[in-house]
Length: 83
Image (cartoon, rainbow, N blue to C red; front, side, top):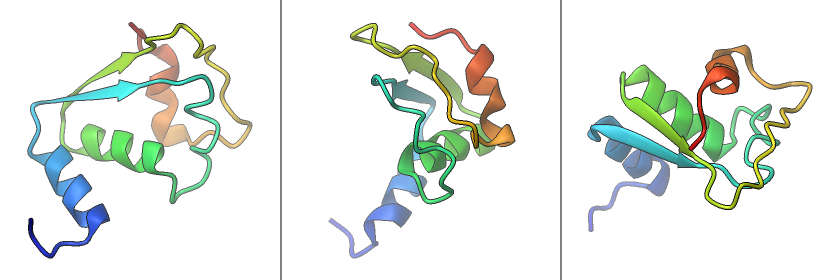
């Protein structure tokens, strides 16, 4: 394992991927108004890298509730199909 810090390693790993799979739990998007939120950061990294993003809702509990401060840069999530 390298000496890279965890955030750098995660973002580099996403950048080197071919597909990004995002598992949506019940309140997955609630903290995305916070710029430091990792769900937000990972989705945006995948988008910047031009990856195909697949949203999975395995337990059927994600209801599409988005906070009032949901970032415009993630608006595409609202209209993306969730498996």
